[in-house]
Length: 139
Image 1: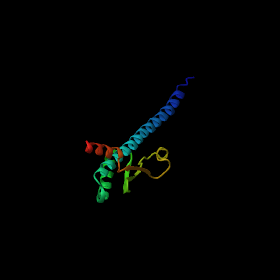
Image 2: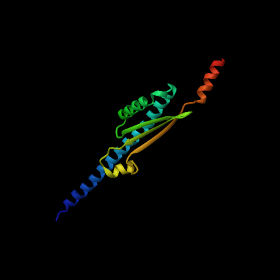
Image 3: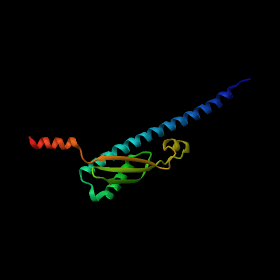
Image 4: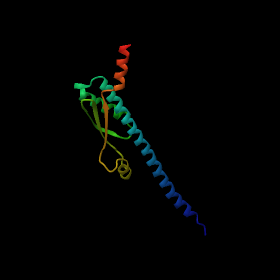
């Protein structure tokens, strides 16, 4: 009696588990990429706008920021970008969705929340920059 069928059944289970693990690793890599890009781009745009004195163009900046983020991200979809100016800083809040059809993987990556919220703050006053400018004027 030959037992070749057992190897086929075992291989089917092993291969299907390996495929799911590879898919989960790929989604995890894309998720990490998107988080890093979101942090980098948001800080970069906030710094640029702080130096350009954002002021009354806040809604226009939020729309531009949302478009640029959606163009840069692979996995996440940006729903809203909201910014508020304080006396010495600009605060940016980005709300994203994670459009993944795998429920378990979506729950793991988004920590069970319906949307992801990313917050960052950028200071308008940079003491080192002002010191440098002051030193250059005195010379």
